[in-house]
Amino acid sequence: MTDTPTGSGAAVRALDVRKSFRTGADQSLAAVDGVSVRIEPGRAVSLTGPSGSGKSTLLHMLGAIERPDSGSIHVGDAEITALSRRRLAAYRRGIGIVFQRFHLLPALSALDNVIAPVLPVRTDFDKRARARELLEVVGLGGREAALPSKLSGGQQQRVAIARALINDPALLLADEPTGNLDSRTGAAVVELLLNLRAERGMTMVIATHDPGLADDCDEQIRLRDGRLLDG
Ligand SMILES: Nc1ncnc2c1ncn2[C@@H]1O[C@H](COP(=O)(O)OP(=O)(O)O)[C@@H](O)[C@H]1O
Ligand SMILES: [Mg+2]
Image (cartoon, rainbow, N blue to C red; front, side, top):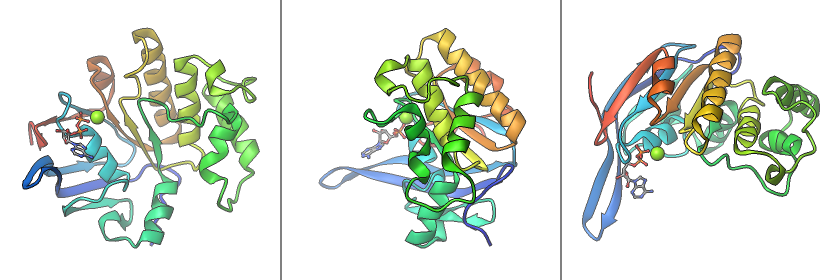
């Protein structure tokens, strides 16, 4: 069994996943309320629904950033809901995550931001060489030394995408990746993501408000109040 999906796409299976948050002394809110999804390897799937419908919470559970209260999640060979802490850390390093607000480290160059996730670990590839290659792939060849503050929003998101690819993930999760971008820049980022998926074959789950982005994916998972809108 491997805990770290690499190479082409991982299958994703979530079974009756639930997650509640405490909202008061004796109140809680079911952010994700019994969701089951099955995603085939290499598919690009959008996760849509109004604000507060549970998109981020579901993505966080697929990325093992958050643990469900109940239910199970399998990614590739691994049941991530049953992994030890150490194995979970390895799992997280093996997937890619792109956030709406890019989450780049402001004091680091574009190149060092891409390297950051693998900096503390031994890799079987040359980190700097791979990071340079990835910046090239996302159209930022020549901007390796630039600080995030010197890059446009679209460029910063491209750095974040390159960073998410540093471990050649079998699963890429993106949480509203175009949410902070104007529509044209957003469309370019979507095109980049879908091209990367076509070239590399990773499975992709993208939470989005953007109907165009959702249409461009192979399938759509629709959430409302923490539940699937259609089974
Ligand atoms: N850490 C948290 N603490 C309390 N409530 C939360 C937390 N995260 C999410 N929620 C609540 O869970 C629901 C789903 O949130 P979220 O998954 O962020 O939805 P979306 O990404 O679709 O906007 C919302 O009502 C939100 O307020
Ligand atoms: Mg969200």
